[in-house]
Image (cartoon, rainbow, N blue to C red):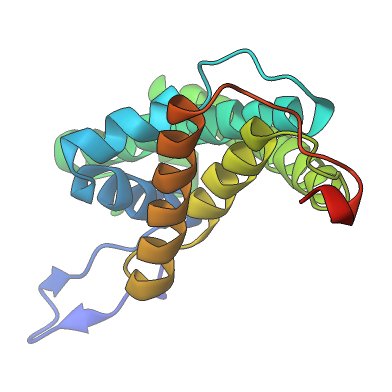
Amino acid sequence: MGSRQKAGDGSVRLPELSRRAVLAGASAAAFGAAKPGEAAALTSIAAPVFSDEGARRCANWLALNAKIERLQSRWARLESWLVREHAWLQISPVEQQALPWAKELSDIDGCLDVLFEQREALLQSISVTGSISLDSVVAKLAVVERLIWREEHPEVHALVTGARRDLVALSRSHPPAVAAREPHAL
């Protein structure tokens, strides 16, 4: 705990941010910055029943990612409350562990570690899975949309988001069809 920086005369300390708090804050900021219509569009992509394995893997990845974001938000809310109500950053690790809420933080941490591994494995399997339908392409773009941070790459994020929306609109105006496997049929 001694690694925190002192401000001014040393009587005020800047809060030390945990890795989970930073991740949760980033997730919350990204989610909070989304327009209501965009948030609805993000959640609607996981709702349909997908027609192929690639699309199902994407839907599973999106569901895991949403669960991770919920856990990160819970972590951030709980840690913020502990900082405010119990001087969490000023007490020793032994005193922290004595508080009943430390178990929940530890449980969330353990869950997140497992979910991060599962999400990474799914992402690797998605990258090698071909798309045999428009649903699968749209689902892959939804995954890419979540992987690109809007704040760091606004133009790329906007391109991916727009392409996904365009494909969704195109799929609604035409009857669903499985993409042809032969290049001459395209």
